Image (cartoon, rainbow, N blue to C red):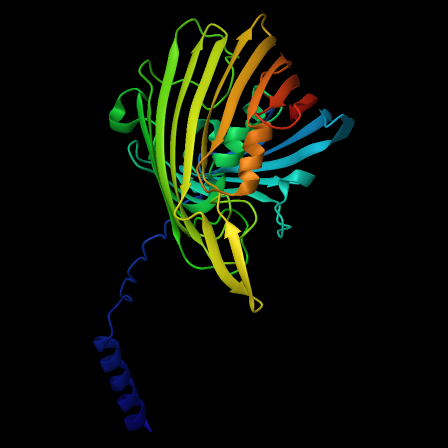
Length: 409
């Protein structure tokens, strides 16, 4: 028994001798750093201004603007001994715009809901739908549906017109809207916005086409020279009445290959095939102390005068539309809010073109008119009235008078 006890004590002493007197120190774990705090979201700023709508902005990465516009119009027409009048909401627009991810990445959407805004065979209200990237001075990018940059008179926004409606020459010979890609610069080479260019490549069949058609392409080049620097040449009239002369001279050329539209990018579609149109444009804008002048010439020529084809086992012949024309219009602000305006234009046709276009030019191809504008908030809120004497070498002259409220909110 004593031997067993002595053996147990000896084993205990040996184990104790092998064990350190104090337990080994445990390495301290470095204290974990708290996760970095997320940056506070930028404050949301909401602004509202008459004519510019509501803008919501969150820092530089995101903004959203919303603006509405209406046109209320009364039209009186005397033609062929008959008097007619028409009162309606000529157009109703909703514009959404802003930027996303960066200040240089911008978007614009414009929807139109007036009766005349819809094209035959299309119920889509889409007028503009595009994205801009403007990081580089000499190379801006735009993708989507928008005005084709051929001539100045058509690319001026409708809200910024001196008269109730656009010129007949422009409505007939312009290129209107299309879906495509545009490269541009408003300050090419950094010359104080004295030199600008636009290069456009699109489908050539205009806006809101949802049916298949023979593939083609529209290519456009426009150059603008502003000898005295930048100014608001994209608005008619001289609402700012700046005390320095301002001048812009522009030229444009376009070729629309295999289009199915009678007027190149708009109008009723052909059924007998397609044609190709060549376009030329030249324009001048001048402003000084409330006086404004806009002059423009347009030319359009189809590859052939007639298309021939077979539709439903029946032969079909359709005429294309080739013509040219010019316009000159001016305005003078006689006070801070009141402007007097005048316009003259002529439309001509090329040999062998559509007889309907020939008839239009020979009965309504010359238009002389004047107007009065009251600017309550510049172009954003104005009352307009105009009168036109419409005539040609044939037919009975027409008289038309219009009164319109154009308001942006």
